Image (cartoon, rainbow, N blue to C red; front, side, top):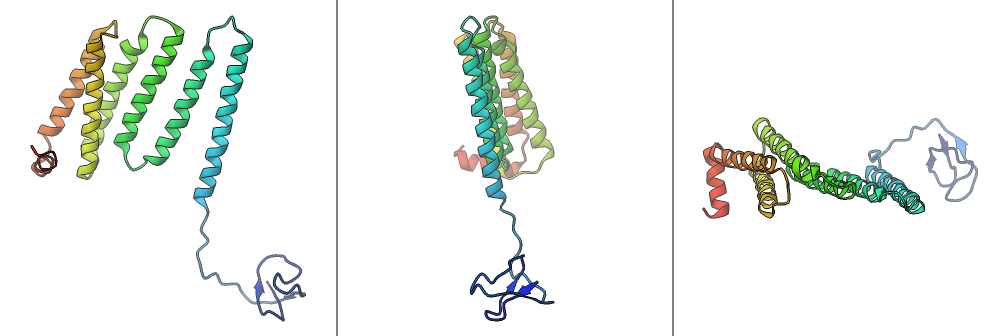
Length: 221
């Protein structure tokens, strides 16, 4: 520890001169006491890490597009790479921003994964495995995860309503794909729609009386 005889300030680091007056410092046995906690700048490090990740993803996408462009005889596989990179970036951002709302994160992940698989299937060609099997499986798995979370984890009414909305959205997606007749294998979408709607009805019917009463008040039922 060093001290400036003129300014009477204590210096903790290895400076050779006083930062105030420029005078010589003398060694002292005084102890430096902090009057504030040593807080790490987590937000700054997180922003830096996100910038590094974004830079790496942009470079990877640009390199894949460049390689694909230099070989025009090949299929447009770079589109799938760019779509995967966009999925990864959006997923990381959503996870960081939705850490308290797991239901919303589950819904976003299902939508992103479904969109990514549809893009890959579109450029890879038929058959329509993404809509026939992947999307229904993602909907069923997401519904099962939501069911387990609502059964084992205590939550507030707001979070419970978010899960109900998630199930409603997943059920609407299944019914919409069936109605548009996009899939060539209908039984998988029918199963996912039935399972999601049945789970939604069960969560509403088997909820406790207080939860049902609060939902009726909020939705004016």
